[in-house]
Image (cartoon, rainbow, N blue to C red; front, side, top):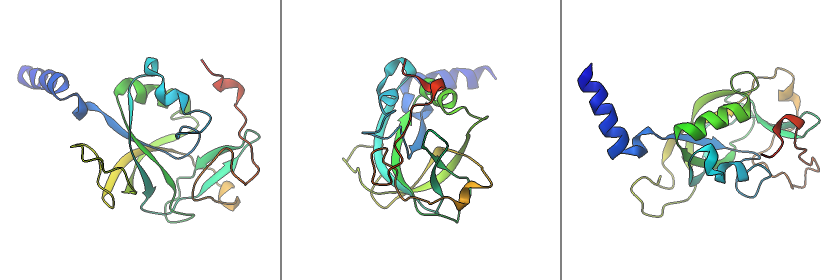
Length: 173
């Protein structure tokens, strides 16, 4: 027992990347979107952009509620292959994202497979284009929403005409 604690401490100090999670964002947390600033805020933890990626399986990405929020529905095999971004985040950022997304009340955090679209800068930990990676995603199960129009990619300023409205409980810090 004592040896495993020491090994864990050594790994977390010498190899901190080993203790970072991958998160796939597909909506307002992407670069250029209304909540991206939250990914850059280091008081929430560390988030490192890795690459753009697309879900291996199709999922319904819908825009719903009076706030026009993008939701990835947890219904693999239906919808479209969704385009988004993979980030490597530390535990502090993962905890923040869980709170921000209302996990597990509003969203569930599950792991999905993603096909890397680009981003090969030659770094040791950078996924290669075409490779299949796994990352956490925040998804939702809403039985009536699969009837909504689905999207391949979300843009708060897109031609869909559904302007994102910042919900009252998510005011900027």
